[in-house]
Length: 273
Ligand code: MLT
Image (cartoon, rainbow, N blue to C red; front, side, top):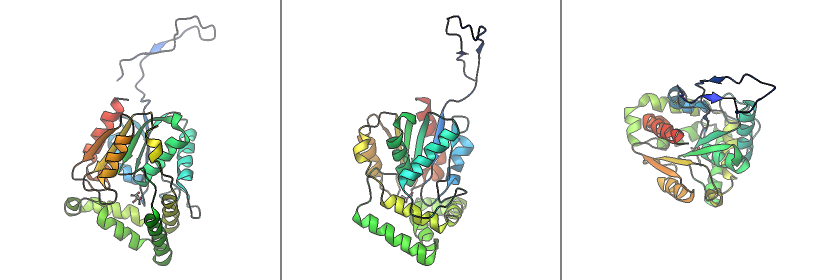
């Protein structure tokens, strides 16, 4: 429990409220918005929703096209995804929050900061990168979208699943592999196609990094084969005062593969805010 008294009494007589009581309060004013990666949904934050609840209030939306959120017709944009997250926090009455995102969720987190920097108490950028897709990357998104139109999401899911996790995770944690596959299998084809277009057309956030003025934590698995850890190093070097943690034994999903370490790093970061 907090030993800080919240005290409405400013020391000046207040005619409208003559009795300003002093009181203890255990509320947490730390709110953490966690934005999922591709092609996942809010369930990918299960170990954080379960275990970080005493450190912060966690809001983990399903982005448009995923989970139980609406599936509008493709294409989508990262700007729309970010604006909808900001609208959600507005609807919840949360003015300031830590913005966290993993991979595509990191692209969205950076875009939330671009659109509403005054709302951010901090940034957590996990398994992500600041740059835009190059021409080859954009062509790969289009080819992937065409494959989903032709064959459904199964080939994309199996292609991604084979490189998402650290080698040992596949052998030692079959239940986690099943959980990851279950979430990806549930992704609607239209949502996948929409998000591929959003990632293809996302802005280059690299020029913005040096202007980020909130505490920033950059997290990355040392065995990430989707986005190399050199991207995290470059991001952390460019954001003033950013902290970098490379999580050993984790692939692209360190919040699931090494959730205890991930959670400890997040809690330590929140405590310093
Ligand atoms: C993700 O994990 O969200 C995506 O793989 C990121 C990307 O494809 O750029």
